[in-house]
Image 1 (spheres, rainbow, N blue to C red):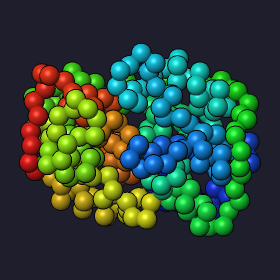
Image 2: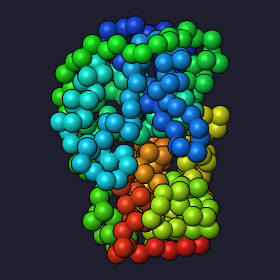
Image 3: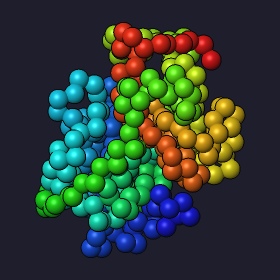
Amino acid sequence: MSQNPFLISPGALAEIIGRTGLSIVDASWYLPAQGRHAKAEFEAGHVPGAVFFDQDDIVDPGASLPHTLPPPDVFADKVGALGLCETDTLVVYDGMGLFSAPRVWWMLRTFGARDVRILDGGYPAWIEGGHPVETGPMAPTPRSFTPTFDREAVAGLEDMREFVANGERTIVDARPSDRFSGSVPEPRPGVRSGHMPGSANLPFLQLQENGRLKSESDLRALMEAAGVKPDAPAVTSCGSGVTAAVINLAFETLGNRDVKLYDGSWSEWGAASDTDVESGR
């Protein structure tokens, strides 16, 4: 396994594939503009034994926002149906390398999974390494997932109002710089452009190279250049709560465990009528 305790290399995964207590999760998800279809791609080819984690389905069924974290019992039912158990070693990957897998890595850990890794380089690295591929739909054997919800890992709208008002936590926004600055419109109708007052911008793409998380020294330097203290309490945000988790992964890689994720992210803050929005850098 990689020196980073949250990553596993394709070669290391290939050596242990099929072992009892190992579950593999395809967490691929794409923006509409990307024109890719995650489930169809999964059925066309995936890591042997993997199950498909649908990030548009494993959500709060009563929420109006995209990707809202489900209640613990809903999460447990959904992932249990995928054959996942909180005591397994869970390896998560996506079809872009490092895009949507960190969100599922974060979700699984937030609900009590004890050992969750991200495949370093994702499915592209698996293919590049010449490892075997399985095709067709999944056929998991349901199991029991017992959730232990970590409320402290999640920030809601009222939490964010407090963080903006008192500066208790650094707010780190993973969206591209043009969306953060408000120089381009948001892709979701009814959502204002700009950012939360006092927040810092650290586009998630800056944290990776060829679909792999950058080195600890590079991550630290990038945070400091963005005005983010790597060891200080923080909360991450993005468009809908998916790519924010890339920043959570970076913080945890640097040893910072005091980081929340704003689940509603800009889809919630930018759509609210009573939240302050700034533009510019």
